[in-house]
Structures are given as C-alpha cells and as structure tokens.
Length: 195
Image 1 (cartoon, rainbow, N blue to C red):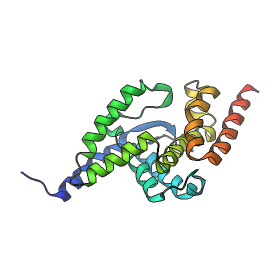
Image 2 (image 1 turned 60 degrees about the horizontal axis):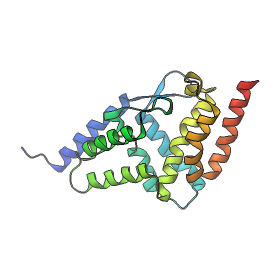
Image 3 (image 1 turned 90 degrees about the vertical axis):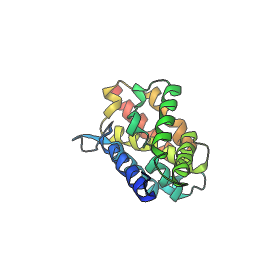
C-alpha cells in the first residue's frame, strides 16, 4: 500500500526520535548525566547561531545549522564513537554511509537526496559551511571537558597531544579565533594537572 509523502516524512521524524536515546560520553555541565546526541545537535545549532562571526570564511548560517542538526542522525544506527574508543576511520565511514543512506532514504522526493548530500558535505569538511560546522562540532565537547575538570579526557587518560591532534586542525581550519581560545583552555587544563 503506497504511503503519502507526509506519512513518509513523519515516519522519518519518528525514526530519528531514537537519537534521544544515543548517550554520548560528554556529561552535561552540571555533571548529573551524560548528554544525548539530540541534545548535542541542538546545542551545536545554538553555537552556530551565537558564534557565526568566528567562521574563518563566509559561511551560510542556515546551511551550517542544517548540517549541525543532521550530522549525527547516523548515530541512530551506529551509535556515538568518541575519540578514545574509535574503530578504524574506514570502518566508521562505511557504517555511517550505510546508516545515512537508510535514514535519508526514508524521506520522499528530493528532500532525502538533498539531506544526504548535505550530510556528505559535512563529512567531507571542504566547503566553508562544512569547515565551520565541523569546527563547532569539536569546540562543544572540548569546552565541556575543560569546564568539567577534564571530563572524558580524564576518564580515558587522554593526553594533551591527543587533544591537540584531534581538535586543533579541525577547529583551526574552520574558526581560527575559536581555536586560539580553545588551545589556551586546553593548555591551562593540562598544565594544572602537572602541578
């Protein structure tokens, strides 16, 4: 039995409700619990709204927010993969691509392929919009770790070098002024641990 366009769109929206059940490693700043991936995506959209002036290149705020709202939808199928527990990049990319095809494939007409293309653009991180969106996706967990006294970095024995390598290039490429501030926080955090 054929379903209407609206029914298909609503089915997709119901399917991605599962993102609220994907628990990330990052805690809320008050430490009461870990954030979920839906909260993370919403928070990143707010980062874009407030920090748009820090994009290295002229970025289209609407597209950046769209990317940030959809970038982790694949976690409905593959879950969250924190930096200290990541499988091979090739395996992760393959799993996420399958998830993206399945999930965005639920959306009828041109919307599904458009969102899939937007998700792929984010993943590639080449356009000005994607570079800024990816930078914000690194800034948020970095800030959480700094503000929670090390958070998941401490829990997983993450080193200064690992943090600089994982966060630095991506933030620097999309928002150099934000990286300048973030690097200060990171170095202060790890210097305090040596005292």
